[in-house]
Amino acid sequence: MSAAGTEISAAAIAAAAQRIAGRVHHTPVLRSRSVDAAAGAEVYLKAENLQRGGAFKFRGAMNRLLQLTAAERSRGVLAYSSGNHAQAVALAARELGIPADLVMPDDAPKSKLEAVRAFGGVVHLYDRARQKREELAAQLVSEQGRVLVPPFDDPDIIAGQGTAARELLAEVPDLDALVTPVGGGGLMSGCALAAHAHNPKISLYGVEPETAADVKLSLERGQITAIPDNPTIADGLRTVQPGALTFPILQRHLTAVVTVSDGELITALRLLLLRAKTLVEPSGAAGLAAVLAHRLPPGHRKIGVVLSGGNCDAEALARYLA
Image 1 (tube, rainbow, N blue to C red):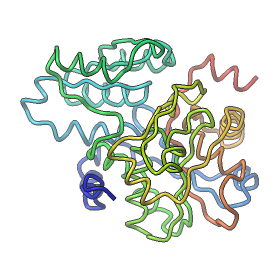
Image 2 (tube, rainbow, N blue to C red; image 1 turned 135 degrees about the vertical axis):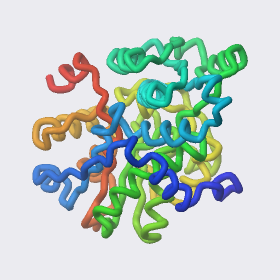
Image 3 (cartoon, rainbow, N blue to C red; image 1 turned 90 degrees about the vertical axis):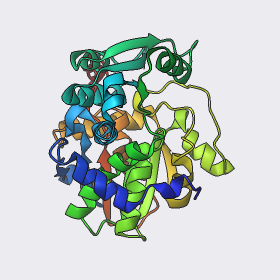
């Protein structure tokens, strides 16, 4: 692991858990006989779709913003995101009385744009085909003097996200595998560090869309490798490369990264909604989609799955169910 990777410890995740306690939901662990039957294993669903802001992102955002100095709070914050991180930062900033600007793609789900604005965030839209969000964010930070809150490549963000796995393993300590969606790697990195601190032998699987498998490609090549910004219904996993901080953590801890199709995401989403009575967005269903499609090696008896988010447009949901 790189020197950067060693900066994030189990103690940092424990400190994050204490820091954000009472501000984030301790989300439930859901069970479904239908899911178990389809998976051929006991599946424990960590319902981060029920987190404040509708996704795990609120954990990292709150952990980061709580550590701003008074001077930084007065300057305000800026984040870039396809939706869930923007919602999380806007909500955390509103709760803490901090101004927040958010850079979001103009094709972001309508529900996520509306939520960010409802939380008081100021939205700056960009065209994915013509602009890079990082460049627009850097320009705005330079002009406005705001504090940048990255979506995944930040120690405090990673530590905050790791509290999800810490809670899950406190409730179900004998899991033999943990499956988590992976975009830029913030959630997977934090969960991997928390999980291996709890049990060094637990198997850890990241899941990406087939068309946005930047982490899988990077791990195969042994270096961060960018891919084109390809379409997928899993907008929250539509990253083009892992982070400089997250990648070495993933290299050290992951058992494997597997991929799923958009069709398999919809199958998992439908099963969760119609049989388990819980709504997730396509990105949030990625972990379960991999389990249902039997992408994991055989032999896992008790599998934890992080349902990472539930912010799904009503119009899109109607299409998936049709």
